[in-house]
Image 1 (cartoon, rainbow, N blue to C red):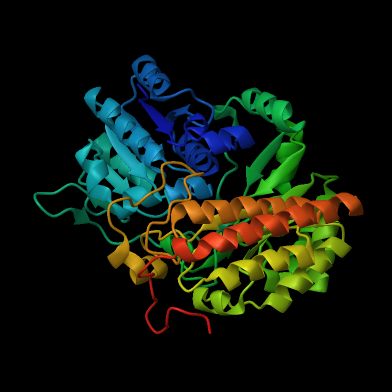
Image 2: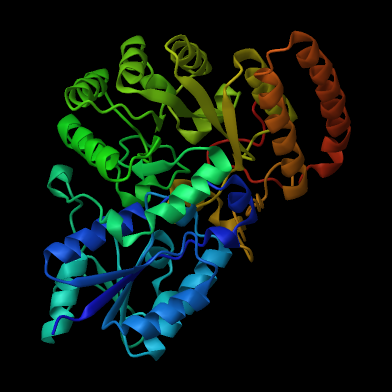
Length: 483
């Protein structure tokens, strides 16, 4: 008799008020790929999809109904919210582990937080932690558990031990991404996602990836957790998945969750040709870097169907970008934004507040850059010291007590920034208002709202002195100012 493997992830959209308001739910892509891999190895697979679930009680009900021999809680590592691991997500996952363990199931967990603090997950009842990718490690582990074979020879695991945890040798990261199967889309309730998206946005968006990893070295980014490598699918393989999506799910839009989409213009143009040959035309959004937005790349993106490109701009001050090791310039930001817009692709920016050394003048420089270039949209966060990154190593001595956000709207400073959490939240709100005003077509309205914003900035500037931290973090090799 074939035993059931229950797959799950632990991102509950309704546990996050900000994301619930935004209502952009995506099915757990990495989990669905793992599910199809297991099916092809002969396993019966069920899925608990927490994304639109009301809570862990639904997981417990599915546990009782399916009685799985193994529960694999695999965070969707293509979802930045999973990488961040908010406190509510961790608490939910630990509860799911305890539920599974109490019902006698073997439990394996994969995710950035579990890799960083495996003892918490093993103490909750997990039997193993998979570090890195799951597609090879998970089937090997399930086979060993089924046969009663030892698991110590399986690469990429953290296991419980007497006193010290046992870590097996690391597993090499996948390089042939074309060899991976299509995600097991049938494991999720596609119509539930469709209804949620159409109610909120009038169209269904679906996620996929064309790459894994990132070859760049921004010192605060989660990418080093998964290796500073860049593995890329062939344009034909990506086009084939988009064709399958078009035929089977009929999404109106695709979100490419790649860290960096389309490293070269040639790859992007090849994708456009492959899509044309298959009669596939689905608009998509991507993430990339400003230094990759050459004229030919922007032209190719438009040809392939890109409607929006999110760029890691981070700051309007060059010294901050240099400290982040972004390897970009503000002139690159300007050129990329203008080129994308000229080719009909909406340029949107990720911005980051609170990096050590950022002062009031640097904040105003970011505001001025928004006014100058009018990005279509912005996302604003504060510097977040993810364990495993060089930035975390730089500030870890000051990360004490609170180590994670409660939810994605928390915006808490986890180290001593120039200013405190409340002040940065006010800056965030003003930057968002700046972005809205920047794309206002009515010149009179734009001028009026800019006057109001100037008053708001002046008022906040009056407060900035009293909101400065007495001992802000100073990075090794730098002083506390940008002068």
